[in-house]
Structure formats: C-alpha cells, structure tokens
Image (cartoon, rainbow over all chains, first blue to last red; front, side, top):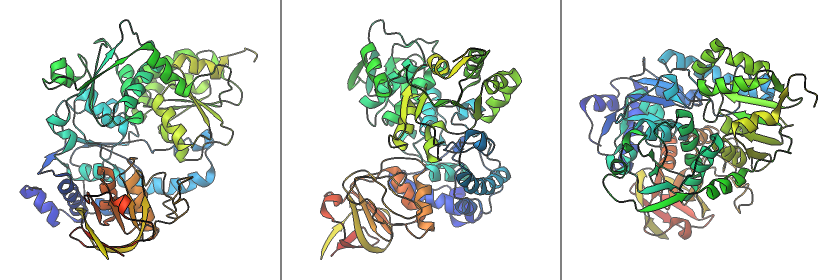
Length: 415
Length: 132
C-alpha cells in the first residue's frame, strides 16, 4: 500500500495509539487484498457490539470521528429499554447491559450517532453516487451499493470500525468500477405483477438463490417502485445468496440504462422470473392460515415511517389476540416521528412492542420459551431465524396484511 | 517431515496440532467463543476444542460479527494459534488480523486435503508450514 504523509504519520503513531492500531490493521488488510492505496470515506456505519476492551484500544487518543458515522442495531432481540416487555431472560439481559453501558459511553464521547438502525440512509446518513463508504450489515451494504450507488465492500465489524475511526479504507473490491457492473440480467415474465411485500421479498430471495458472487440487473420494474418495495426486494438477496450490486434498470443510480448497468457489455446469463418461481419460493416458508402464530416479527429491514403509518391504520380498533406477541423494529429517529404522528401509540395500544433491535438475529438472545411458530413479512428475517434457531421454531412468511390479520382481532370480537 | 508454502496474508510464527474442516467455517455459529468448542452438530469435530490449534478450513462462511467472536475466544484463552485455508475470504482475514494470528492460503494444493486432524504443524513467517 502506498501511503500519503497523513496516513504514514497515523501508522507511525503521531495521532495516538488507537488510530495507529486501526490504520495498521487496514494496511495489512489492504496489502492482503492487493489494494495499492487508501481512499477517503464519506460515511461510516458500525456495529455497536464491540467487546468493550477492544473498542477502548481502538479509540485510545481519538477525540472525534472524521466522518458521519451511525450505529447498527444491537444484533439480537436485546433492547436496553424493552427486554423485559419482550420476555427476554434476566440472566441474559444483565450480562448484555453491562457491556452496553460501557460501550455506550464511548460511543457518545466520540460522536457515533445512536441510530441503532440497519437503514442508515433513512437516518440521515445518506452518501451519494460514487462516494466511498464503509458500512456494516449485509442489508445496509447491498442497499448502499444498489439503491444509492455509494461504494462499500462487505466489510466486517472490525474493518468498518477502523474505517470510521481513520476515515480511510483500502481501494479494492466493490470500490472499483469494473467489479460493480452487472453480469447477470434478470427479466420478468410477461404480465408478472408484484402485489405486496411478500412478492417483492420472494423475488429477491429467489434471485439470491440463483446467483452467487455476482452483480445483477433487474429489468421490468416501473420507475415508481418505492423505497419500501426495493428494500423488500433487495435485502433478501444478500441472505439467500451473495449478490454484490443489485441494479434495477431505469431505477437505481448506476443502472439508469441497461448499457450503464452492464458497462456496455452483454449479459453473461439471463434469468427469467415467473409467477411460478415466486410461489415456489414462498413455499420455502409456507404460510398456513390455520396455524397458531406465537410471534409476529415486522421490521426486517427496519420499518420506515410510511410502513409505521400503514401498520398503525390497520391496527385501529384491533388488538393482539390473547397470548400472542408482536415485535416491531425501527430506528430511534423513525420511532420519534411515529410517536409524533400517533402511529406508535396506536401500535403499542394494540399490543405491539416497538424496539430498535435486529429481528433477523433474535435467536442470538434467548427468545421466550412459549414461542414455537414465528410469522414475518420478511424473507431475510425468516432465513436467519430459521438457520440461527436450527429449526427449533417454525418460520412462515406472509404479506403484511395477512401477518397482521392472523395475530390480531377486532376490539370486542370474541375469539 | 513435509513442508508446504502458502500465500502470507498475515505473517507470524505458530506451532500446534491441526484441526481440519473440509467445508466452509464461521466463527459465528460453528464455535463457542466461551469454550472454544466446535458446535457444528453432526460434524466429526463436534465438541473438539480449537484452543492453541492450527485451524484448517476451505474458506469462511460469513457472519460480519465473526471478528468479535474470535476476539472473545482469544480473550478467554481458548482461541486457535493460526489459520490455514484453501482460499481465505476477506472476513476470515479480518478475523485473523483482529487477534493478530498468522493466516496463510493458496498452497497450490488443497491444504484441507493434505492435513489431517492431529498433524503437528509449524508455521514460519514466510508462508512455509512444516508438518510432522
């Protein structure tokens, strides 16, 4: 790696032991990747689950972060505010709380923004097309690369932390033009219409299963496709597979034309998605209306304010059925707005518990023992809950409407 | 005594028994950071410890929080002393750098097929591994 004077000074310890440790780790990482130089990042997003003593080492001598940096959810159902209400065990919570407070103090001191969300762009951390960034979270990464055209590698927790501290990341992988072009074209069968979040999710999950370690471009979606629809389409493709950039032709910024998406080349292969493929994918987490659902998970990726409004509307004059649980996840700024709008009050009055946790990784913390059947509107969530829970709970996916209907009843209605 | 030479991703010296996996491995899910025990149900190495072992696997299996899991294992004195891969992925490299243990890959032949559980392996900083 060729270093600038500033980077060399950092590596020599001129700015303290924390930055010295961080930049030297990035130098060894960059060397092993074959990177020749660093780039300056414009945005950071890190996982607030650092072992406290490791975080202490990395921040020693650091006064302020060089770029806007947001925090990811805690990567489990553990919420410092809501764990008791959610039925998380006390033994688990007590251990987690100790580390949480230690880290939290350091985060405040350095100015890590406590958004606790997997959608940094929705929290005001909004890099532009062509920006170099270093973000944690498979969903945040694929959405930044695809929807924003900002460039992040699939960095892990330590590389993204070192990048946020130093403002540098090695110029390699998905930061380079040639690694971002689509090589696979995904078309939609004539007349295929995606009706709800579960249709978008099934299509994304299906595409992820078909393609490994490549960038793809989808053709056939209208320019009016919404943020939420794209979120449900793109996020599961990083769970069922390892897609790099998920371009949508005519929609996402690096794919305004088909030619741009493919860098002027022809697609190496073409996948056509049909209604049959979508229905077959839904059968992986088949929804059975007659099955008693114990826990409904909404907010993977995190709920946006638009969704919070939709859920709130549906829950007017409805409440959770006896003995059921409804967990919803959204970042703190969205919760504040949902509170202002009355959405949060409606949802909570109906029995929902809103937190800023990660619903895909809930089995990391012990989920309540009475939970045997989990329902969600998210394929990404279903994928991780099933695999992390090693098949000990049954996981089903349905559209938002079916999800809410199956677990709530009209107020005054007798079951 | 045989020797193999791999690509040096993080140089170092280490000596330990090989613990070999003929599949992708992850420090989240496949190993307990508290005890260092292998938690892959049904795998022949299930229940074995990675403590002070030279961990040998094909490549990483993802899980972006993996570096923190390996850090916890090392802090608890149950971590491996080195990692050898057929083809290391970026995240496994990041894990090794976090705890600063040597990691080598690309040996020309599949190191997961060459080494067997219990082989005593000695790593030199130039990428050479002696096996006895």
